[in-house]
Image 1 (cartoon, one colour):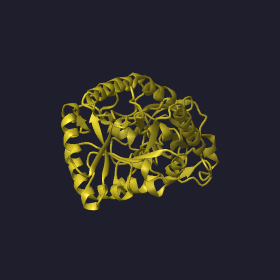
Image 2 (tube, helix red, strand yellow):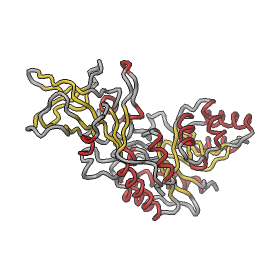
Image 3 (cartoon, rainbow, N blue to C red):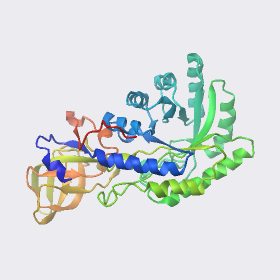
Image 4 (cartoon, rainbow, N blue to C red):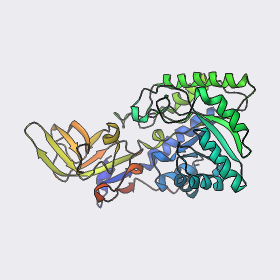
Length: 387
């Protein structure tokens, strides 16, 4: 991170993106995909929708996974071809459905029969046929934070297993719907590959039951969920794509010619982005020292929302280490980036780096308290070819 100190006109708080690391990460993804010709990756736009990053990812040939009509439009604007765009979400409104249909996207990941019926009606009125993958809730616990677990029955996501056959039957009767696959997503920040193994085995069971009825879909989408090492961003700057894809290749029993899709977000962009902030004040209490930054929970929400850990570093100081609570200026007690964080001795004006903030950082920023949105900087040019 030393190059940050060379930016003399840095406006904080800001997001700082390491473009070279992003290129290397995408390169690793593509190198793994070469091993498995039937595998395709759609980048999860919700993780980070910065146009500079999206254009770089689209030029590399990845698809896009969108969860709103505006994300579909942004993906198209940034160069993702519609035939590689998938659109998920439990609450697509009519206008968003029209937007996706007009763009002629590859596939809707649909979460309920009522949604599929609405898509059928809108497609009929538009003179189109909508390609649909049924999002199935496989009732598998991802063993991650309960806010980012999405594949158990208490979650709002997906079609429950006991309803699946009925939904398939009724969907097949709809004239403007083409069922092309099944979609799964069980959670986020998963680093235990046995969870993905369990997902594969469950999908094998589901597929076998459908095959017994003569139903084989050409596409299976396993969603995303691959986690990163937030504790050691320098040691593990690229996620474990090798074991991730190998797990699916080993344990998923794909039918002949079946395409396998993934929706990776965090694992592609998290480590390439950091939040940079300046120390406003150091406040000493009887039992604690507080570092008050100019970045707040409106700039980086994850610690307040998920109690998420990010490695924090004072890049301005070589003083002996002390423990601090690192907080922001927002009028909320939840506006805290870390408690009892060991840092080099800190003074007003020091620059702090909150690492691995490239996913669900900038994209979740808000103007709460009427604060300005954080600035963005890039470590190098992002316009050269990434093929």
